[in-house]
Length: 366
Image (cartoon, rainbow, N blue to C red; front, side):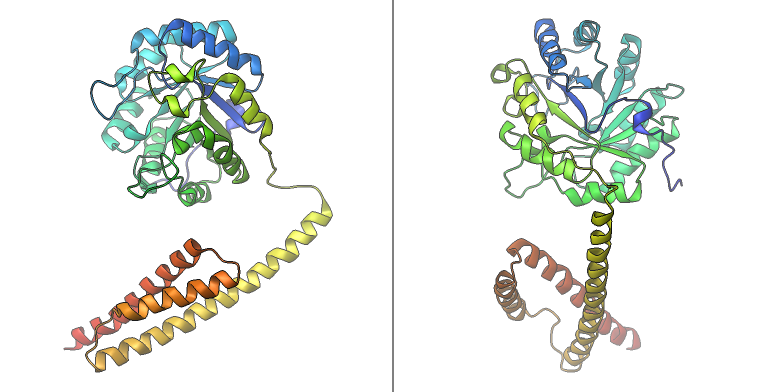
């Protein structure tokens, strides 16, 4: 299995300064809506690619499922009148064939398709021998391997103009977001494939237009290459995802207010200071590792002691005491509740595994 994706740099197939901006309506609803929105987006001078959904995979029947092949004509007319390259979502071989025939410039694989390897392979097979950029949204559920698997399938079909789209993940937990950002998964993808461009979709992460600015800025601060933001000439009457779409003028204001930072600088003083600070971080990390190793040694001793006295590993009262006291201590040091709780859960789970290992060794000897 490939350990690296064979990719062309995004700058070689989309000429744009960071961030690359992909925008357009959630769905192509009519020729007037599509062309009208496209002209206003082009007039901002900030949009690089025009997007629109032609086929819309909806949760339940009866919801607007897109204009179908007729919508491709509207999309291509918008391209002709603005000069913007166009992108749309494909979920099967038929979609791919129709898009290629129409002259669509960029395709993307949606979250509901990425989750199904059979569907991704169907799309990949239809693209063999075709040199076209393909963007892959993360799967609905937080599964990094599924996301990577979809990218690999397309790459093996000969697609080298690949990029990923981070659109957040479904979660049962209540949150201000439509889809939980789970930035750590996108960061892990970038860590494993540094050459892969990642584009953020603030519209689907937020689910409401008021959150787009915040999410977009966060994405750029994490060095993501671009943004896919839904824009509609009249969002209030949109046939799908009305709450998360913005007008072209609102989009222009969002983009204008974003701060675009670089991943490096030629400033020597900055580099020297950063080096010193990172060395301090390295030293502290070393101390943390040594402390964690020492803590697990004590956990092992506790496991032995519990085993000899026939006491259960899990002690709920002790765990509650740890949570309560450590959160109070952490708050006094300026640390947040969620950070402390998540950190303690990781440490506690590892401690349980260490103690369980001690118990298992006794069973094996018996």
